[in-house]
Image (cartoon, rainbow, N blue to C red; front, side, top):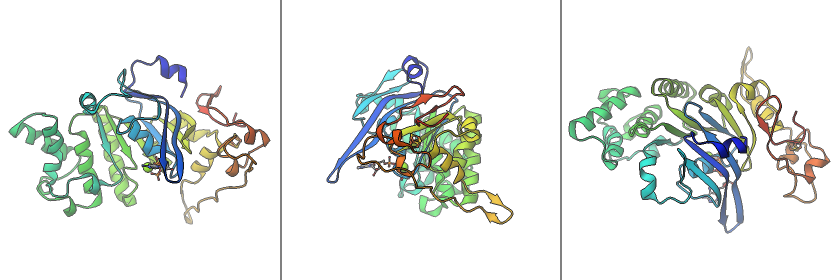
Length: 323
Ligand SMILES: Nc1ncnc2c1ncn2[C@@H]1O[C@H](COP(=O)(O)OP(=O)(O)OP(=O)(O)O)[C@@H](O)[C@H]1O
Ligand code: SF4
Ligand SMILES: [Mg+2]
């Protein structure tokens, strides 16, 4: 995303500038996020896509300030929160809900469903007694959990119902922004569709904005206005959703879009093979990180890492060969 636009922004819900995060372990250093520039404006949901290990979850954990970045800045509603304490972050956290891939793991197993949804209201001192109860019941109703299920425990619900409860809990404090990390990935396809419908309805009815992390581009297409494609910690393509699907520019984005299974007369189409026939340089670490897999790789790709650049047609891409 254009850094000049990000630097001059004062209206976003969340933005990150040059956000970088390194993990250190016995095996050395892993750069999970490498100089990300992203911005989320109200009503402009952002999809973060990319294969496993591309840094999507790390990016949203940093955006929520569950971790501090090694470098770069994080802004919430015009405030630089990069170094803020947990106490100072608390009122802003109310404006940001989170839904994970594992609904059961995100709920308290020893509390009823209603107890799970009431808990954030208690922690943040919102409403009291019967009013608090009414708010929680209204949330459950909104996400389609029948009254009969509100006094049961999480393990007594199906995965789809658990994810509905997790969404209700994430919305309990009236957030402007919901961060969803692979929120439908673990569900059966038919249940996925129901949860996507619910998220579409909530977005429209409550003016919610999402940061939606997924390896599934088809789902992102249904929920997001723009998409950032990540590869090994970097954004390699950013564009409005429809433009990205109509004319993907980066070879990796093209491969991801071609990999979306489609229904044909013969059944579900087979996934194309990862081309995996790029160039391998002598000095790994220089050049484009995608070169070894890229069918368009040329010598320049091994010598020079491409930065994100704006295309005349709109959008941004990090690829020497993209037009
Ligand atoms: N706590 C950690 N300690 C060390 N390395 C980590 C840690 N968390 C993530 N990583 C590494 O950082 C990189 C990015 O991981 P991340 O979980 O952000 O990717 P992801 O895109 O969310 O992947 P997935 O689709 O599998 O969820 C990976 O190489 C991962 O192994
Ligand atoms: S810079 Fe070169 S190797 Fe990298 S994606 Fe573009 S063509 Fe492929
Ligand atoms: Mg992840």
